[in-house]
Amino acid sequence: MARIIFDMNVSLDGYVDHDRFEPDAELFRHWIEVVRDGAGSIYGRKLYEIMRYWEQDDPEWSDDLRAFAGVWRAERKWVVSRTLTSVGPGVTLISDGLEPAVRAIRDEVDGEVHVGGPALAGRLTELGLIDEYRLYTHPVVLGQGAPFFTGPRPPLRITAHERIGSAIRMTCVPG
Image (tube, rainbow, N blue to C red; front, side, top):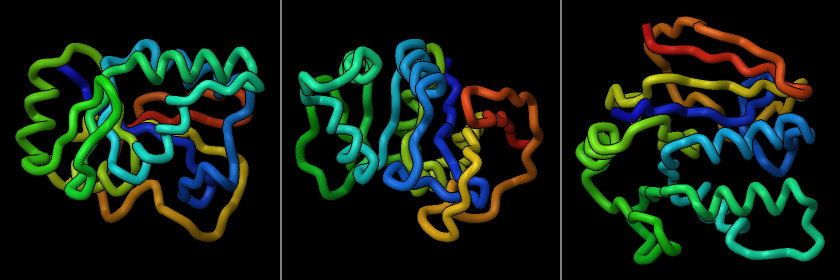
């Protein structure tokens, strides 16, 4: 049975924005391992379209960038979208029936399935389908942007915290 995990880089004031800050080298290597060790990722359309960047090959990339691209391409992916009509190779499109589709993933997959995108995570939270939140908090204040949490959440309990590079990962579970 899968555990559904929402984990993203977040500013001190609670926003996610891949264009305004990025992980340092140590945290980036951590993300390579997260993707490599995970059972897959469920993406919202917007984040999936951003992540498709990793489908290309760039001779200028560092070894770490090539490693991330390799594990990202190899991971199992599901994309939730009502507007996309096709997705990349090895990717499953979920165009309707979000709750039954994610419950089936939870029942049929072993390991951690990561959720990409705060809007999708908000919908899954409302359905009671997020098992764990991992906030990778960076020492930057954005003042605006897409919030990590898109609305009120049930009470959360901190179960772990750890410094990884210049960020602090805080793990929380409902209850």
